[in-house]
Image (cartoon, rainbow, N blue to C red; front, side, top):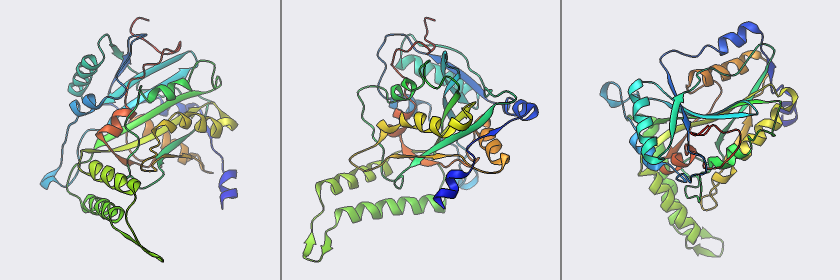
Length: 325
């Protein structure tokens, strides 16, 4: 089965009509491009920013989650330019986002971002997603000396993948509501924590939990006790044709810094593959509309985990748009 999967196409080509439709973004979205100051150290993570833009909304009886979805994106429409942007659903959220980022990183400037995907007729389209390698109750790494997104943009410098246009999208929405599924996830998390803390029966007798198991139990309980977010990480790889799989792996490698040696959690890479063009088009439509779905998988992260994922890079790089350019 694995050999068959490897033979499946990892890209398709779009015609003029398909490229036009992918270039028409969903209405009712607002983008803000972030231009950080050059040669200035930025916070390694943005926990305060994540908490400040948090909005919880539920439907009737508090069951269904209607909280707004936010997208953090890294666009590289050409090798010579990278722009960082957030996409939100209301003008009010856009104002809040600009205010909180200005407070966190003085000297930051803002401009209107792009809702369009950089796709034209004849381009190949493909991509990939990241999901947690273990159950998402096990947290990712949350402590860094500098922004973990530095590792991602470092791989997108102007001399890398010169034949490829790229969009890296991190979509997130607060977990809210009182669904049965959420109750079951919470129960499973505490069951895992209790199992890690208990003595294990071995052939030669019982064995006390190790220091690592106790630490894992602490981290699982800590994550469960915090506000959590549904998160989706995906890449649009445009124009790479037969190198699409390789490009997906290159971009995904920048996220390896998030692997947590204490919990064993890591991010697993999946390349979008299929015989039908519709699979690729639906994947790109979901990216374009900033919505979950489209063959993408979501997982839960805590505020500290998300704070690393949506941090602003401090790396100085010639193709990044800074506030003084």
